[in-house]
Each structure stands twice: as structure tokens, then as C-alpha cells.
Image 1 (tube, rainbow, N blue to C red):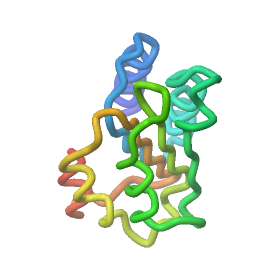
Image 2 (cartoon, rainbow, N blue to C red):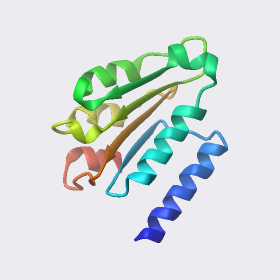
Image 3 (cartoon, helix red, strand yellow):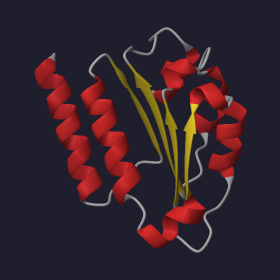
Image 4 (cartoon, rainbow, N blue to C red):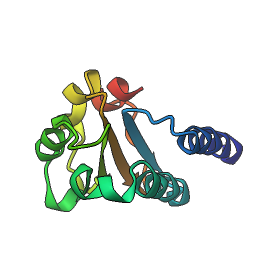
Length: 132
């Protein structure tokens, strides 16, 4: 299992370093190193410093609800090609079901990162099925 995680991490990092960003990253699992490393890399490298002020938003799940995150993710970037929305500690949401509709039709100019640390997302949920 550790090898599988390492391989997935390596593939994602390879894409990120090549500036190939997916519209949504749902990072979860008990191994917090991978969650932190990927979300930190996106936070530091997806936008240049001049773009971050208007186009990078970091939320903590305890301070927002999914609708606020989705509203931010549906905005268009200002004076840049893309915007980055990162939700840290998303395990703090009661459930992730509010993101389902956004998963079906993400905004192409938004990179949405949902970081759930310390636990895996229940594979039986509609959210997980939409994300897969």
C-alpha cells in the first residue's frame, strides 16, 4: 500500500512540476505527509507572487461551509489564467456532500484543493463516487 501511495504521489508531483494542473484535487488519507506536500506545492507554485493576492484563497473547514467554497471556486480569476482555492483541514466539515454539484462541472480556470487529513473519505458516499 505504501508503494501505491508513493507512486500516486510521484505521478501527481510530476504533473504539478510540469505545470499540468487538474481542476480538482481531493487529498485524503491517514498519511498526512502526502496531503501536506501536494497542497503546499500547489499553494507555492501554481500562481506567481503577483497573481496570488487576487487569485489564491485558503479556507479552513471550521470557518466556512461548502457553499462558500463553491462560490469562491465559481469566480473567474482576476488578471490571471487561473485561481487557486485550497480548503485545509476539510475533515472538519460534517460532510462533503455540498461539493457534489461542483465536482460534476468544475470551473476550468479554478484549481480546487480539498485536503482531508488523518482519515480517508468514505467510499460509500455520493461525494466519493462523484469524485472518482
